[in-house]
Image: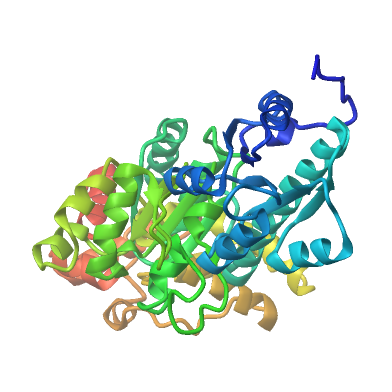
Amino acid sequence: MGSLPAVADVDFSPWKHQSVLVVDDEPGMVSFLHRSLAQRCGWVATAGSVEQAAELLNRRHFDLIVLDISLPGRSGVEWLHQLRDQGFVGDVVLMTAYADLETAIDALRAGAADFLLKPFSVAQMLNAVKRCFERSSLRRENFVLRRELDQRDGSVEGVIGNSAAIRDVCARIKRIAPTPSTVMIHGESGTGKELAARALHRMSPRADGPFVPINCAAIAEHLIESELFGHVKGAFTGAAAGREGLFYYARGGTLFLDEISELPLPLQAKLLRVLEERKVRPVGSEQEVPVDVRVVAATNRKLVEEVAAGRFRRDLYYRLQVVEVVMPPLRDRLEDLPDLVDYFIGQLAPRLGVTELVRDAAALARLTRYGWPGNVRELKNLIERSLILGYFADDFVPDEEAVAASPAPTLEPSGDASLAAIERRHILGVLETCKGNKSEAARRLGVSRKTLERKCAAWGV
C-alpha cells in the first residue's frame, strides 16, 4: 500500500494511550490499519478471525474494536451481538465492502458505534476512531462528574490551618504524592480525609486523570462488587445491560475508597487480588480487565483492632498500609480555629447571599471550650447556621462539666483579650478546678491528655 499519507488535521495526542483490536481476514487491510493506528495509539493488536479476536480479548482489555463484517466462520455482526450479550460495553467500528440498508440497520442494532464502507481513506478511518475515543472519554468524564455531584458535600478545596499538626500532614502529603504507592488515611469522621486524598491526587503525576471517590459504607453490600468491578449483562437480577465499574473509570487516576473498614470480608479478598494483580473481573464475567489505578483508602476506625476482631483481613491491611496519613481531630489543633472560621465565613456567605459575620474574642473563646466530636465538618455546619441566623450560634452542645467549670478563675490579667490568652486562662482555670488532675481536666475540656500536657509544657506549668 506504500507510505502513509499525512493526515495533519486528525489530532490523536489525547488518545496516545488507547488500545485497539483490529479484526479482518485481509492481510493488506490488517497491515494498513495496524500501521495507521500504531503510530497514534498506545497498543494495536490484530486478528484474522472471530476466534483469534475472542482469545485476545480474554487476555486483555481493548478500548476499541475495528471489526470487519465478512469473516470466516462467524460474521462480525454475529460476534458483536455476542459481545454485547456478554457485557462488552466498549465501542466497535464495523467495516464492510458490501453495504446495503439491511446490513447497516443490523450493525446499528448490534451496537456498532460507527460504520466504514471499503475502500476508505486514512482520514475517514482515523476520524471514525477518534469519534469513538471522544465519546468514550466523554462518557467517562460524565460518569465521574455525576458521582462527584451526587457525593458533593461542599468540602473545602485546601487544607486550612497553620498548627504543627496540620503542617506535619501537609509535609507528609507532599512527600507521598509523587509516588505510586497505596495510601491509607486515618482519622475521625469530619477531619478531612477526602480532602487529603484529593490533595494527594492533585499533587501526583496522575493529576490529569480522574479522581473517583466511593463511600464503601453508603452502598448496599450486594451491589458494591458491581459498583467497584462492573458487571456483564444478566449477571444478577436487574442487570439488563453490562456496565464498567469504578476501577475502570478511574484508569490513569486515583480511586478513593472511603470507609474501607465497611467492606464485607468476601469482597476484601477480591480487592486484595486486584491490588496485587492490577486486574479486575466484572461480576458474571470470565474476562479480567487490566486497570492502572492508584488506590487511596480511608477509615475512621482503628484497623488494627478490626483485624484483631476478625472483621478485617490481615493481608489486606498490610497491603493497604504501605504509607499512612493521620488527620488530626479539631480538638488537637484548636489554634487553627480562627483560620477555619474565617475561611468558612468567606466561602459560605457569598453562596448563601448573606452578610459576613465578624468574629470576636468571646465567640472564639466559646468555640475553644467545645470538644468538636464532629470535627471540621461540625464547625462548618455551625458557621453556616450562624450566617443564616445573623449571629454566632451557640446552640452546639459542649461538654456539660466543662460548661459547669466556666467561667474559669482568672489566673492572669484580664486585659489581654487575645485568643491565646483566653485559651490559657480557661484551660488553667479548669485545671485548678480539677485540683491539677490532668486526665479529668482533659475530659472536661474535650481534648486529649497529650494535647493538654503539650500546652501546659509550652506555658511552663
